Image 1 (cartoon, rainbow, N blue to C red):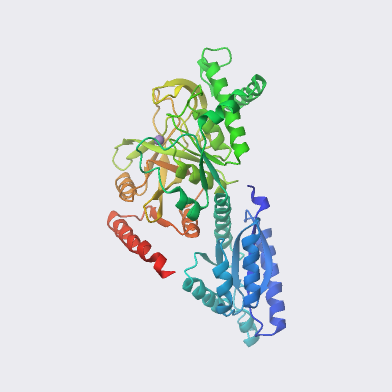
Image 2: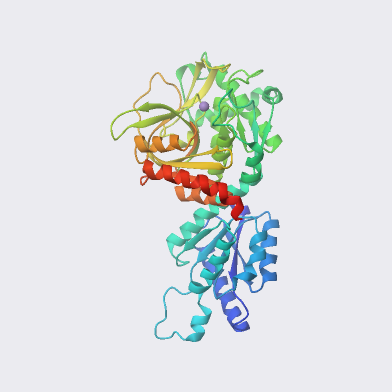
Length: 500
Ligand code: MN
């Protein structure tokens, strides 16, 4: 999925009460504003102006078309004049994609000496957007409200971020996640209701026996492996015993074959995310850790030990961040480091961390991995660079999905000479005590999807579109209020369906 192939539609609400002249002005203003938004260079997705909507029939026609158009990932509405909101009811009820209600105005400031009744009747979004706000609230319609002058950077950046979320949402609506093996035996938090996930979040989770993948790996030619190993030599360092001619080089070649075979298999299936399991390796020479690292960097979602929810979220976060600096990765909470205000959590996994978040040049190493049937495995070893980021997860609470987002500060770990894996070290905000305490209170996973590029607000927008629960852990979190939020949400989700 590429942003250049996507569109967000812009619809201006009006009515014919003020005469045809007024609508002509509204239309001209809207055309200029949409052009201005596109020309700002701030928006990752092209805005397409769909004209004014002046009646119930026109509103319904636009939203029906938006539902059916595969390029359209969201609609922005703006009420230039007063647009009686009963005419929006049927269209909004039919509409299935993300909605942004832009509360702005064509002119920035009131022309004090010129303003007359005609001007006031034409430029009344302050008034019309409230009417529209009522009907979207009355319909309990999930949407994002952005308030600000359309030329302001802050307004444009809010729209830009929301567009990224729309792209992630559209991608998840036809995401296929392939699982090689089931969830790790008896693990609860990474499991969940796959039927509900498809209803609520759009993606389809499918099983593939690892035996079906083996022929794809075996079919990779020596020449293809040579080419890929040359690429590795250009972009990575090699441990001495992994270089061409050295004793462990063959394991690097086997990992390259896995990378090519796995990519082909996923392309063949049309899958954009996958999970592995260290207990499901029959016919494989090693755990596909290195291949997972490489494919994650290309945008494939990944979850270890059958964790399809994290695989999906990692893919979605990668799509949302396309073109932004930073990178994202599957990560796992491993070891605590108690150190006063700098108390932190070492994030790692057996192997599978995305090299996009590396602080330096990743190094290829090969070591024996004693868990499951993993065997002797190649891997990229590095430490994540410092910076602010977010960790996100989705858990299945039985009657709803709950997204949890924790803002984290990635800091520099010390050297880890005896731990040859990729890792990151972070302080969960506002502190290890409160951050980890809230995460555990919320039932958050040990696996998470991490991003240096996305903001908490973008994840909030995603949860709003998906209409799932959202719990945020940031610098303002305190445990007492957090627990009360959870209690309030329990009631809300119990009553939610009855309200609609
Ligand atoms: Mn794990």
